[in-house]
Amino acid sequence: MHHGTAAATVATLLTTALALAPTATAAPPRAVVVPCGAVLTSSVRLAADVGCPGGNGITLAADGIELNLNGHAITGPGAAPGERRDVGVRVRAQDVVVRNGTVGGWSIGVLAGTDPYEEDEEGPVSAVVRQARLEGNSSGVEVRREGDVEVRSTWFVGNGLGGYALTGGRLLVEHSTADRNGSGFASFEVDRDGLVVRDTAVRGNSGAGVACGTDGHAVLERTTLQRNGVGLDAFLCSARVSDSAFVWNGRHTSAYLVDRDTVEVTCTTFTRDGGPLTFETEPCATGGAGVSGTMLPWETAPR
Image (tube, rainbow, N blue to C red; front, side):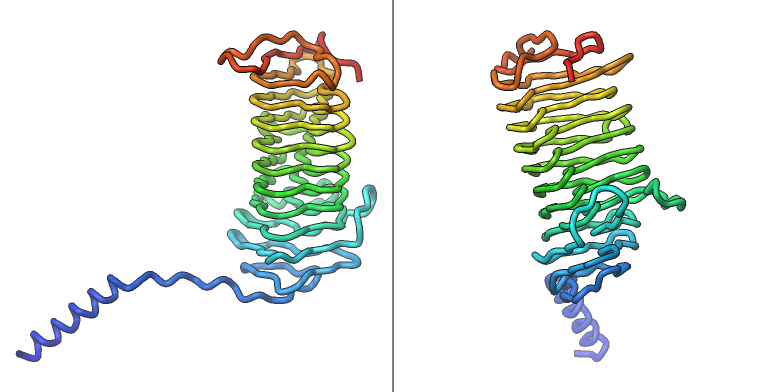
């Protein structure tokens, strides 16, 4: 065999072997100990709990990074509604992920968007929170102007307020549970889809399961509201409810509406517990067991 032919044959074999070899996957980041106040610019997997007696927890400051709590907790000094504004996880970048652990004991567990207590405009920020537990915070997740947070497969337990979208923020909650909070979820001054709760159980909250305040909006889809003080509380805002269930709430709905505010209900069921509905209902158009109806300003429920 000529040397040129042999070299070509070897090159062909190497090329074929490389083509058939399995593609290497990036190893997960090595577990590390992270101190309170850390500002992360690369993905991190926690090796231990982060306990913070004061100050803030962790800031995510680079696009696309992931904070894998790795079963650990980021714990603050304790929930404190009012003047104190400590934050467990602050989102200051886009497309970041927080997952697989607990954020608890903070004024705000996870915060995204421009904070009205600060002067600087941050620009758009976004995050996904999944397979997490927000527990014992004054507010579990808050999303403000230019912030966008999606929460999936997560528990909100024992917070003053589970999740809050306000002043232009956007919060989507899917396949999650809000259990025994002061209130489950709320919105204030947000766009039409500023608060969306989908395929979620909202139960045992002493106040409202879901609430919208002045110029807010709430969308509930395939969601169960059970044993809350009020299932849905609408004050000077609008809401859309579809394919959901209201079960044994102290009151199913409470509203004060004006002008163009409406509460639209489609194919949703209500137990007899929870008081009479304050708007006309009709059978679901699909022939299902639920009812449909629209609450207008002149039909508002007493508060």
